[in-house]
Length: 124
Image 1: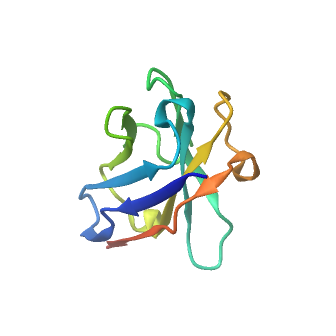
Image 2: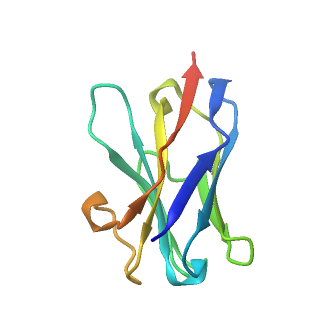
């Protein structure tokens, strides 16, 4: 079992920045591919980005590419989502997720473990 706990959400003005954190426990963190997803009210959960086990490779949704950056610290069992130039349409609950495979996948059903999410609200 893997436990994931997100933090760092909040209210920010458009153009601002936030850094989300996700703390993992229960399994060797370096064996997990880590993803970030988000879900806005009335919408389906969508892929934001993913980072591979070593942290060398990342992949992002087009909607956040160039604005968001995922990083990880395997020694601390942490994954981060740095969000810059935030827009009102980024408002959502943000989830981190863990995939036991080595594949970097965008589909949520491949992920084995999920956090409870953290709310991000961007005001215009």
